[in-house]
Amino acid sequence: MTARRLMVLGTGSDVGKSLLVAGLARAYARRGMRVAPFKAQNMSNNAAVTADGGEIGRAQALQARAAGVPLSVHMNPVLLKPETDVDAQVVVQGRVQGRYSAAAYQALKPSLRAQVCHSLDRLSATHDLVLIEGAGSGAERYLRPQDISNMGLAEAADLPCILVGDDSRGGVTAAAIGHHRLWTDAERARVAGVIVNKFRGDPSVFAPAADDIRAETGWPVLGLVRWSDAARRLPEEDSLGLGRTMGEPGACVIAVPELPRIANFDDLDPLAAEPGVSVQWVRPGQPIPAEARVVLLLGSKTTRAALGAVQAEGWDIDIRAHLRRGGRVVGLCAGFQMLGHRVCDPDGIEGPAGDTPGLGLLDLETEITDDKRLVEVDADDSLSGTRITGYEMHMGRSRGPALARPWLRPGGTPEGAISDDGAVMGSYVHGLFASDSFRRHWLSGIGVEAAQASHAARLTRALDAFADEIEADLHLDALLAIAR
Image 1 (cartoon, one colour):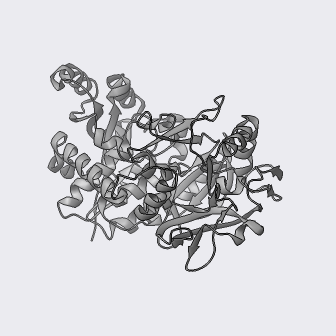
Image 2 (cartoon, one colour):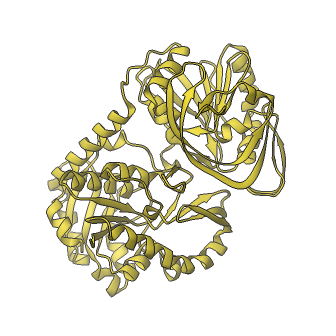
């Protein structure tokens, strides 16, 4: 089998490429096609574990879910997980290759091109259609010599392209024309047309802009994809979507400090979807709200730096006051590590070597190590006996007496910890709140009656609704004809 292939380039980051690919994948899969998503290089601390113990970006995991196909490391062969503004952990075909500065990574990229093309060919051999998402803007000249994710990949793999712009920000006409002017003649020839995303209003009003785009570039506007409420019910790809309160005013408040290099924040989605819950991000400079019933510390790519931020913001003082008022604290992954007495990184795995005092809420300590644990988890909640499915994705090991009172039991093995009074809980397992029975039990413990019957069913409905909108707004047969 040799798949048709179509590349979705963007005029910038956060123009909606990831969700558009998810919607297209769902729409074509419903036609009986075997569809695979692909993104050569993704930069995100939101990742998912594949069945073979690798990791890929959460956006590609959502796209695979939309297509109804298993996750594969080949869907995202290069994943960059930022640790500072200039350093990132580089994951290649699911495995950590090392930590690189931005300059060192640019030098590394050409050597990764063969693995990127190999992954694309692997998917192409077993699917009918591969939808290939670009990264950021498709026309950054300073990145072009080493490019493996936009026109560099399109040229290496001979891919047809469409260009996606975001109308909600304004300037979509200028962005399309600007890309045309920055690309070479050969690059322009790969682009079959433009899709205008996140469109609001009367399509007839946009007609002069479409005429301008065609006149200046020769590219037709292939469709206006309307602003979608269904798309907003799908997980955010990266931290550009953070900061807004999720939920209804007056509902039970779960406060979430916005940590540096925050990771896997889609752990919150099942809670935020509950009508009785209001997830409130606590931005730097803000106190943890006194009305919060739960403070939830999420994962971070750099545990010690995140812990330092908690202390610098005074959130550690707020958390202790929150517990004295009868509140609860939950830590997931790095958040779990922060709950102990100390986090040490003797080899400088996540940054400068050293130790950082923890919050001291659980009797344990954590050492950051270079062996990364990537595993799917099927466990029982030790309090309710309800089943949990999720995954672990972390570096470091925790030890201490607190582990004798575990939160979860995967395969009968103790995992995580609960304080003696039950007010503080921590676990390395991501995705546990997506387990419906567990979520209902946990919410009942903080006085909330869960209304969402199935988180998986909610995602399915949102994907189907978005695919319906995509089918109404775009000519799928015409797009398929562009693919080759």
